[in-house]
Length: 63
Image 1 (cartoon, rainbow, N blue to C red):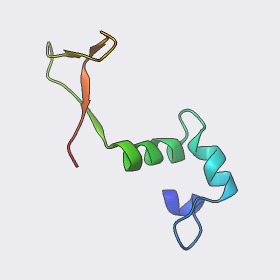
Image 2 (image 1 turned 120 degrees about the vertical axis):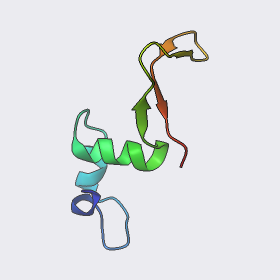
Image 3 (image 1 turned 30 degrees about the vertical axis):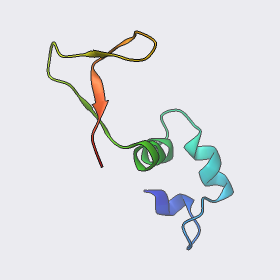
């Protein structure tokens, strides 16, 4: 997916940069996974509180 938005050396093209900031765009989703890791849902009823006290039902997998 990201190859359509990168130069041969892996740098993002100008359209790739803009696409990676567009909410819901496949390039943004791919960039988030590459940079932050993939999120998965926790089992039903399992949650944790983040640093601001918000209940989270998803977590990032270790990679």
